[in-house]
Image (tube, rainbow, N blue to C red; front, side, top):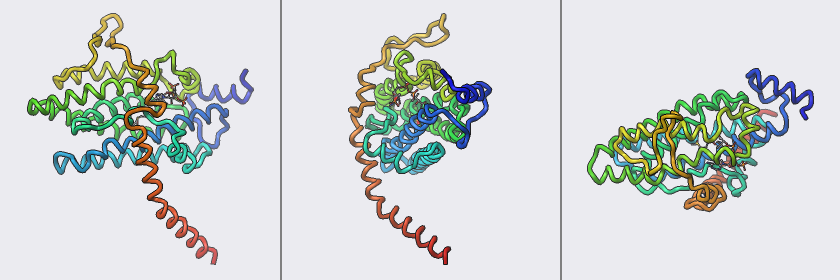
Length: 311
Ligand code: ACO
């Protein structure tokens, strides 16, 4: 049963009035936002790694400059999101330490390796493509700071998606070996990209409550379908084949039907047993440890400034 306070809160949500940091909110709402926004921040931050792997080997200077800008954008997204999560009463350090200890989740998608240059194309096209489909509705979510952070994130993601598609386009019009490289990247990234939308609706424990609170506005399966429907014609335009023999336009539904997702693989990755989970966390721990001297120096400087001001 809802308390009068909770009922009033829900009524504001229903009327699409944004919730701001100092407003009263149910503990469950706060916890759900901390969980989702921190996972989202961690995903941006860990997501820098698979692509950074190719900065030093990008095929041209221009490609290298674009990729560097893209990876820096991801760092920026992480920063907005860590700031958004701090408005809910948790510290950035604690949030971040949960990532480093392996306690916090981050997106499954960043635990797969980037084996060739075409993977950078496939990630932009498919992973950032999925991210946009997921994040555009979050621009309208009920929590103000999260909604506002998503506006700029989505603009940058759409540039990322275009640059990925353009890499795939160039490769698929290139030599037979380049086209094969693009196809191989699509083969490896397709299934993880559609699984990354999260468990099927009947397995998605958080969806119903998050939708009632307008943190989510569409279910995992609905967003997955939207991504598939928009991506199939793009693959056809590239002359590449999506690795799903069951993929077929369904006239009645007005959507593409698709084959079964390997949920065992997905949950394995979520539980930390994917191909790169250990490597990703090790890289983030290393960066944190190697940055300790810098944080200490910043603190010492801040303390000194404070003392000078007191004099
Ligand atoms: N990778 C890892 N964990 C996942 C994934 C995934 N792809 N999808 C779902 N999960 C986890 C959920 O976090 C949840 O775990 P928890 O309860 O321990 O926190 C569990 O699986 C069950 O899933 P749901 O009940 O469906 O969870 P939720 O309602 O939070 O929906 C979703 C998951 C769609 C990812 C949602 O949290 C969301 O929209 N997040 C914001 C976007 C985001 O984080 N994107 C990250 C990748 S995009 C990148 O930006 C570059």
